[in-house]
Length: 67
Image 1 (cartoon, rainbow, N blue to C red):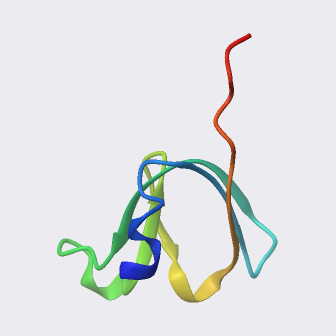
Image 2: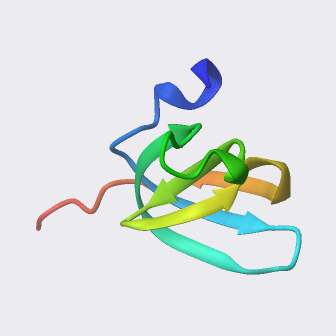
């Protein structure tokens, strides 16, 4: 999905319609050739299969700044 390509590699917090949250690096957005039955999904910090149609909110987190 072009709409999310600009945040791949960034730290995000994703909340789905069941209230589950994932925090980590957005690594993939799209269709998985190995699991086409999943449909559109995202992978966050190696957690695959978070379905696009269940996502209610994606927040890009600011990178931590060293002090």
